[in-house]
Length: 130
Image 1 (tube, rainbow, N blue to C red):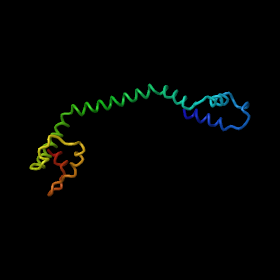
Image 2 (cartoon, one colour; image 1 turned 180 degrees about the horizontal axis):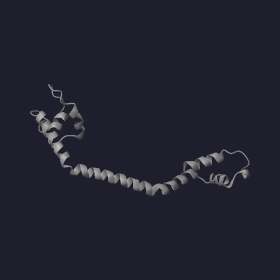
Image 3 (cartoon, one colour; image 1 turned 120 degrees about the vertical axis):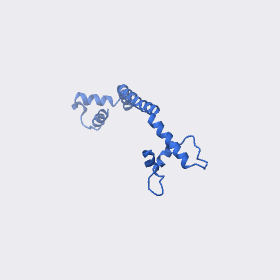
Image 4 (cartoon, rainbow, N blue to C red; image 1 turned 90 degrees about the vertical axis):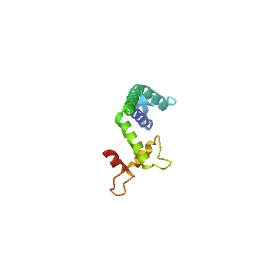
């Protein structure tokens, strides 16, 4: 597509006798007379590429769906999340947050920030040991 536009621009900048141009170059000169040629060529290229782009998009969506199914069905992930919730509630016992029934996923990033005062272990280290 870009090569075609480059050829048209190159022929368009030609200032010599147009009869001396080859058939291909004269064809490009005629193409330049078509109104909105670039948008028509873009539409044509879209139709040519549509099936392959659609197949690639379907493949990507299938990959995402498979990943989501794996996350939904993962017993180990559910167990880890339960332990995080249980340990978080144990740490926050006696506060308003001590009886949580869930947590936001962005709070998982804080697991490395919570440290034991004496050993320097993080919540993540402790979770891995349990």
